[in-house]
Length: 448
View 1 (cartoon, rainbow, N blue to C red):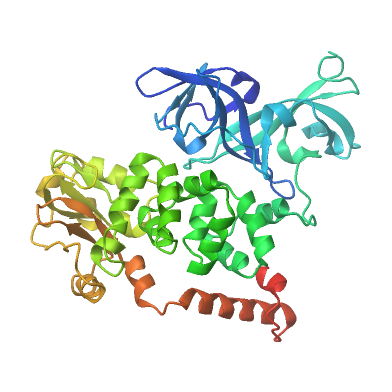
View 2: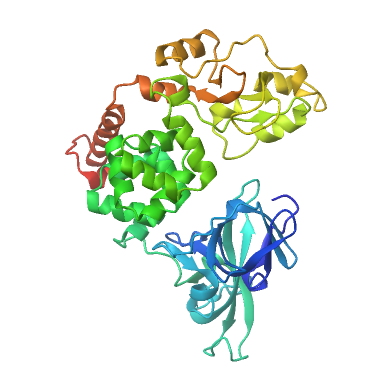
C-alpha cells in the first residue's frame, strides 16, 4: 500500500468512492469492520463494508485494498460480491463505536496525569497502517468531554490514545468464544489449532464461527483431518466456500478429498471459479504424487523480468518461506499451468546479482523438474538429493503446473495421526508445567 495514507480518521472515509485498478468506481464505503481485543490493545481493522452500485453491501478485506488516498479507496479489483454478514467478533466502527459513551482514564491528556476518570463521548477514531505490515488498527480516539451527546456542541474535545479510554475492549475473564478468540489472537496457527483440538466440539464450532476467514483457513490447515471435516461441516455452506478459497489450494483439495463427492461438488460450485478450478485440478491427481502434493501458486516470472522484480515478489509478507526460496521462470501465461518452463532461479543466487539482471540469465536450467505422477518417495528423494525446500512440477508439454514444498512432503510421510500425537504431547507438557509436574489432560489448562 505504498504511497497511501498511513493514518486517517474514519469519518473521512464514510461514503468515499471505491475504485478498481482501472479507475472504474465499484461502490462506496459505508462502514469499517474491526475486531476488538482484550485489555487495552487497539482493535485490528479487518476491512470495509462497501455498497456496490447495485446497492448490495459486501465485505472488502484490508488485504485487497492497495491505497487509501484523498477522498477515495483503491482495490486490487478482486471482489467477493456475497452480501456482508457481521460476525460475533466484529464491530462496525461507524455504526457501533462512534457516539458511544466511554470513560477517559485519569484525564487522558498528557497534562492530566493523576486526574479522575470521566465519561466522554466518542466523536471519531483514527486508523493507521502498522509499519512494514499490511495490518491496520484503530489507534486514537477523538472525544468530547461533558455529558452532552454528539449533537450538542458543548465541552472540550481532544484526541487520545486508544489505551486512554475504557468501555470498548473485551474483558479477559469473559467466557464467550468472542473473548477466547481475542485472547489467543497472537498465537501461531499451529498453536491455535492445538487449543481448538482440545476444546469440546460445541466450543470448537463457536470459536470457528468467531474467527475471520483467513485466520480460520490458516488454523484448518494445521488441524487433523477429522477436526477439519467436523468444523467445515458446521459452517454455513457459503462461509465454508469462503474459507476454502482462503486456504492454500493444495490444503483445500486435501480437505475436500475427505468429503463425499456430492459435498465436494456443492462447495466447489459455491467457490469463485478461478479458485475452484485450481482445486479441481489438484483433485484430479493421486494424493501421494507430486501433482496431488503441489501448490498451484508458486512465484512465476517471465524471462524479461529482472532480479529486482524477483526479490520484490519474494518479499511478499504472506508468502510461505519454502515458496520464497526460489522463483520459476516461464513464458506466458504467468498463471499455472504456464507457458514453457525455462528454469528455476534460487533466492541465494538472486541476492548475488545486480538488480537490473534478467532472471532468465540466472536460472538453473540443468535441474530436472518433477512429473505430476512422481510418487511421494521419489519426491522426497528429489528434495533430499538436490538440497531443496521446493521443486517445480512440469507436465509433458513443458508447462509449469505448480511446486511441491518440503512441508507438504513431510505432512504426508509422517504417520497419519502425527498431528493428534503432537497435540497430545503438547497438552501433557503444558499441563504438567501448570501443575508443577502432574498432568491430567485437562483441555482448559492445555489451552493456556
